Image 1 (cartoon, one colour):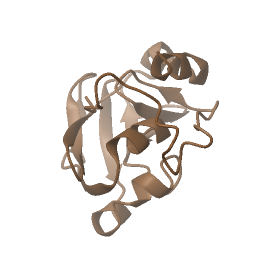
Image 2: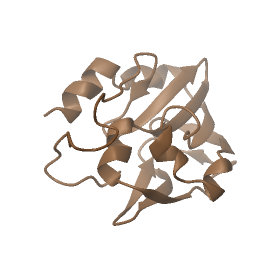
Image 3: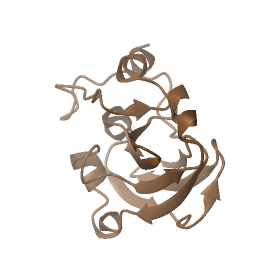
Length: 145
């Protein structure tokens, strides 16, 4: 689970906060990950909201490539200047690629969370399980509470 400050407030002074980004073509988790679903292929990262709350990302650690993970299991961790948070598997999946660019440039998660800042690519064991993930509208409601 990504450990965000509690209570969660949307920080209107943050440089990325002018427009909080919730792309409609993605699904979301309550743990603040996004999922791009293309058949049974998944691309996963953390949301714009999560990266803005965490602050400057200094390290992304994923050592689960090639493993099949159950929903709710950590697939790695993300380290910001003041905290380390687990990255949580949204659905049962096999991790088949890790974004190697993040090894030398973890700040890509801050700069482009839905693009170059993706974290892993995986194959869903049961693609139908992705239907339980949040829509952009539902995720937006979650973070605005």
